[in-house]
Length: 125
Image (cartoon, rainbow, N blue to C red; front, top):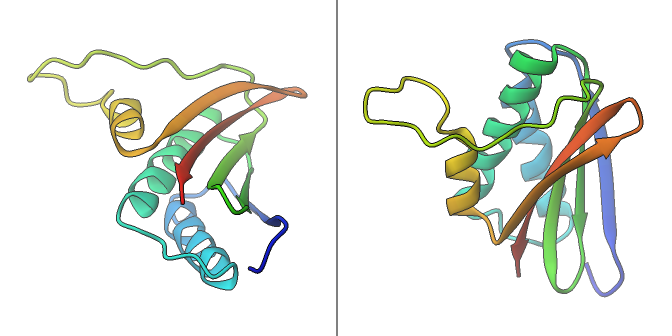
């Protein structure tokens, strides 16, 4: 990418294979934009897309945006329920995902999006 904004998106079904497919899509999009993926990206993409598959149960759209300042990845689904970060205990089996997202990204958030929601994260370049 030589200036401007690079944006690409793809829709995925609510299937167990979707997180892996979304990781491949994001990796390819970042390569096309001339950006090195980094170790955090596959972990965070997996977490957000898995949450969408398990909790929303609807198709999701992954949007990758790259500009000169940051990389932004969004996961849109049709469930309006916004995720909340939990405080897991050592005995807790689930609920650590957004804690990981918070630790591995520069910024993240969620918002209503039409009848559903968008959960996003950004990494500075």
